[in-house]
Image (cartoon, rainbow, N blue to C red; front, side, top):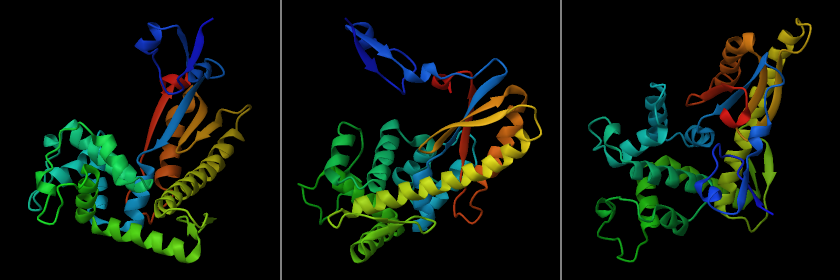
Length: 289
């Protein structure tokens, strides 16, 4: 009997599975539109937690990278941020075209390590083998035993001082009060032995959840008013996973719904310090969205 290897996010059968005694199962292939008249439409917030961090920390470098990235429909935020870190002398615009894949990878890992409270040891493990020139990160005070993760993390925070001060303020507030607050003031109490990183992570994920719920409420009101004028439902919210939403939409309504989504999602927080951005895809099956 063959064993099943479940790969929910993979669209293709892994080569290793083909060569072994395993059968790959991809659950997303099972979800398809109800009929030929409908298609699935996915809506995904782009870099949601990083945008929340930019808003809450008010870090100029982070905010600037988002605005520069969003000027181009195919802009890559982490490549833009890496350019401001590795390829900018402070006098000229960051040189995005000079950013290597390794530099982008390191930048992305540093960002998410900060968001989710991962330590320097984790960063060192993740970036091992990446081609990064560390000489510019070392100072006279740097010990020869300082880990790569520590060097990268300290240098990144030195270049983004408001992120550092924000992270420190979250830890201080949590230790004093025992709870964190989302962007809308929703409180979450954490264990007294929770780390500062857990407090930061809770704020980002709670705030992300709040923004998604607000956008979904606005969207539901709009599509309900459309469905009320139809003989049968033509737009349905099917599934929500973290910062992604799946809808089932009648084909002749796709472009209309896309416009409504942009209004409900990207315009849900008009006073946000960075634009909220979504990407949308249309397909007959979930695994090809």
